[in-house]
Image (tube, rainbow, N blue to C red; front, side, top):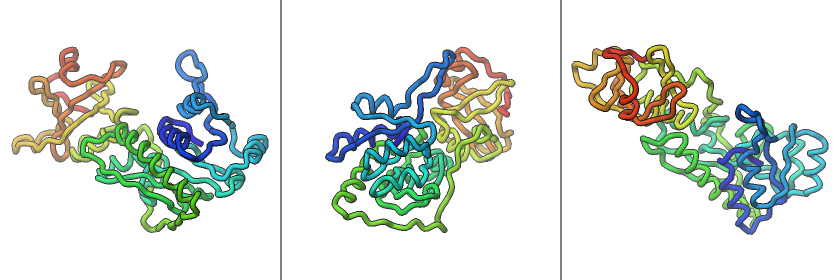
Length: 305
């Protein structure tokens, strides 16, 4: 069970293992673009190539859908980047359902664990397989795989790495289940942290914050939806930044102040300076700063709001 491309490596890994997939369940096709044509999910496209039966229920507790699952007589349900399963569904499998979650639980329970790991400047994260129960991301842990987070890591690059790590974790989990060697570990709820979904207000940059914190915010929302600031009344998205220590005379400068030096853009923050490498204007493609400056004029003493 899965929908976005994050779930593809796990599907492929199980497909090429000794374990057998009886069906793939994903979200219904959604209208997309100006023409509102229906677009299938990434998992549906992959499942079609692998020639699996595909189910796309509107509701997971629909009686006809539940009957189809019951007829399949599944041993286990594997869930990756899907939605909350009702107990009436996962009880139809002999061993219930196992989820691949993109954090080291109980840290970052919720919809956006990768974003929050980068937002908080963590230097380590990973994936967890756990037994699904009636409360989100609280089930017993089965397997964890760790990975380091680089200082320039973005959600986009970490998303890819963790999706690949997920296939390692799920194969270990399935092998242990088959051999009867699974050891369930209860989560310590006192150590739990939340990773709620991202809202539009989370994307707005506050230049009074330290440069390191803003750098993490920009990394967390790259490549999409993109952290932004307001310059000359227009929304500007920022990408690929680095933190620079200010000179003594710069420490008194106003947060949000832009400085142009040849082909470089730096912005003053509440503590430190942020060097900008990539930028995107409204309605324009993302580009490097040199290309941006060749076609856009930034007034001297301009302030980002």
